[in-house]
Length: 197
Image 1 (tube, helix red, strand yellow):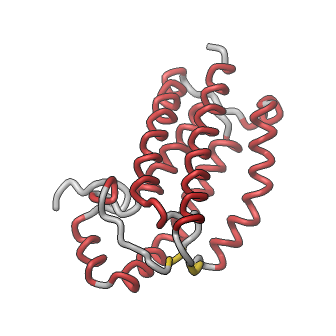
Image 2 (cartoon, rainbow, N blue to C red):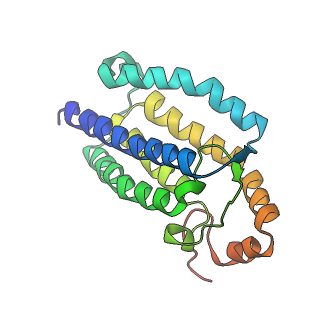
Image 3 (cartoon, rainbow, N blue to C red):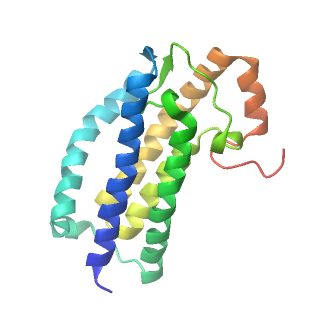
C-alpha cells in the first residue's frame, strides 16, 4: 500500500494531538495561578538538549519523509493499520486526560498555589494516564512511520523521561497530599487500571 496515506495519518493525528496539549497548557498557564517548578535537573537537561533538534527533525520529516529513508524498518501492513487505530484512539484519550487535569496541567513537574489532587476521569483508576496516552501515541508514530529515528527514538526518549521522573513525581505527590495520596496509590495502577483491588 502507498505510504503516503500512512504519512498523512501520522501528520494529521500528530498535529491534532499536540494541538490539544498546547491548548490545555495555555489554558492552565492563564488560569492556574502561581506555580513552582520542581522538575529534576537531569530530566530538564535531557528534554532541553534533545527537544529542539528533534522538533526540527520532525518538521523536516513532515515535509520530506525520504530524508530519513535509511532508518526505515519493514513492518507488515496490519502493523501500520494498528498504528492508524492507536493514533486515532490517542486523540479522545488525551482530551479526557487533559480535561481531568484542567489547570493542574503542566508538561514540567510543578506544584501550584492551589494544587488539587485529581482522582476523577481516567485518574479514578490510573495514577499516570498521561504517560500511558503519550506511549500509545508514540507507539502509533513508530508503526505509522516505520522509522526508527522518528518513531523509535521518540518512544525511547519518552520511556527515559518517564523512568527519570516517576519516582520523584510520586514522592512529590506524597509530600504534597500525604495519606490521601498514599491511599490513592493503594487503589490505582500506575499506567493501567488494577485488575484486582
